[in-house]
Image (cartoon, rainbow, N blue to C red; front, side, top):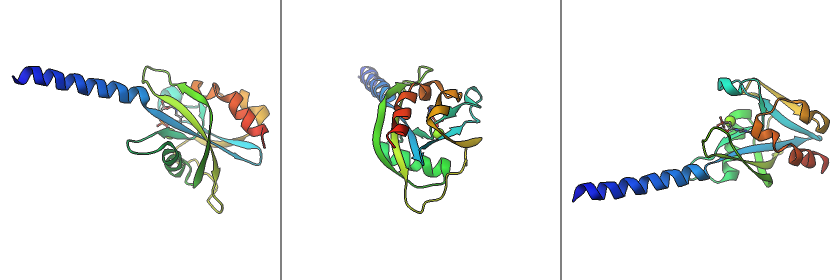
Length: 154
Ligand code: 9L3
Ligand code: MG
């Protein structure tokens, strides 16, 4: 009797796992100050080294997207932000991971430290006209129109 049950159980686990990975969200933070957007340059993994991205990372189980973006900015930038609205549409990440990039506009809370590149090679404040010239990760590049709109909305 055990084997058929085990089969059913494994099937259910597989289904959950694929649902979970299909819904895995990576959050990105669009932090704008004085009309400039904060971008950071990756140094890991090797395939991403040298490319620019919005700060952020995976939403952990039990965490909301806003909580994740606040935590990632603490870890990567050493600063406190507040999550504002969602920006643009989700972008599927390449590599068959099933993850999607979802960007939230954020603002630095009053009195919080200036962002530092704690886990990255470099940080840079980018103006609207410089956006297209940076070697962005592919997913982030697809959001440049929304980011430009955010910058020009003041
Ligand atoms: N990713 C792409 N664009 C971004 C971020 C924050 C992340 N703006 C991709 C790179 C990784 C994956 O998402 O493949 C997980 O991100 P992280 O946890 O390595 O930051
Ligand atoms: Mg990250």
